[in-house]
Length: 494
View 1 (spheres, one colour):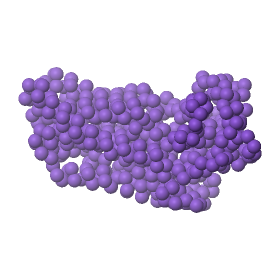
View 2 (spheres, rainbow, N blue to C red):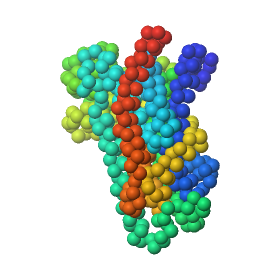
View 3 (cartoon, rainbow, N blue to C red):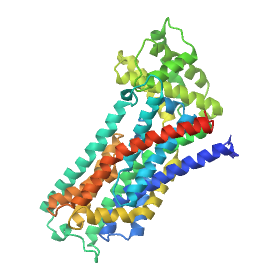
View 4 (cartoon, helix red, strand yellow):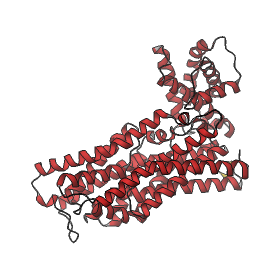
């Protein structure tokens, strides 16, 4: 069968349909959880009818996804083992993709079913950590503390742990400030289930729902975008390995030529084969990869290959399917190694550092991109998931966090803080949980108003938050180990 100009076997088509289906189902469950939080206040306070609220939220999610930079998507991808990402399209990389999706789906669907505002972000990242640990332990000469890429892990965990505290404290402070400045007692009384709020209150709540939905699309939506793009790169590398619509190929070629003298200076007197250079960089890019005198010679050889392949080319469409895949691998190895050297302060000369890092970012741009149709597909999956799954989460947020039902002021305060927090995280490329930020914000407003918190619900939510990472890590590790055995040994995919 022909697809995007590539001839695919029946088995490949099966893998493609299954993987894409799982990725979109993951995003639909993300909609069950996270987008449902965005519409909780407008539905619960009768500011909008459920169907209108969900459709509007879906459109705002779509806009947020379409305008997103893709930075968060590749921050999450950076947690994956570099050698598996480089070997995308191999049996082990298929095992990685399926394990991430299936383990995250199992946990997310289960917590949604019992109505707990669980974090899809935590589930996804827990699955990735489990896979990284299992892959490291299955690799020769690896230890547990060397299996993870600790720098991005620390960055992601800091964002995920701090953001709920920000949501709780800032929403509480905003509610108290609102009570001080806005002399409208009805704004801070529990919502009347039989009435719609005043027009100005409805407008305020619709505006905050819009902000949270847009911010959710721009941050949470990117996680699915990154995985879906990896799937396409793995199965259809001739089309998606590189951004074939890029207009910067000539500039990248010129930068590769300008980098040759710098690297040759470091590589003088060292002779390596192409295969040796690739092995050296692959090992260096692993979490436990150590610097050595052979790194720069290996970079010189890899850059020479990139320069030769790009010579005279003005578009990636000029390459064959295998050529694009090979060039992507070269670019990934080179870019990852230079990025790691820069973080380790191994690039001493300021001018050389500027040239190398500028070139590295150019390469990164060509391999870290998100096709527009992927953004649309993810946004639609989020919207469809919200339409089918909103009710369980809306009831939890509106009625079961506090001892009194949610007031208009509490809903607005929690959503304003959530929208600003998520937008700031997106600006810095940090993945955060819409569920955690908004639920914490609602809890903060309940505490600030003195209405009290329902201990049982908070205990259940906290339990799901605490268990998500270890459970999904265990699921990811066990799924990956099982999938590697099935794919490599039973199906014979290498």
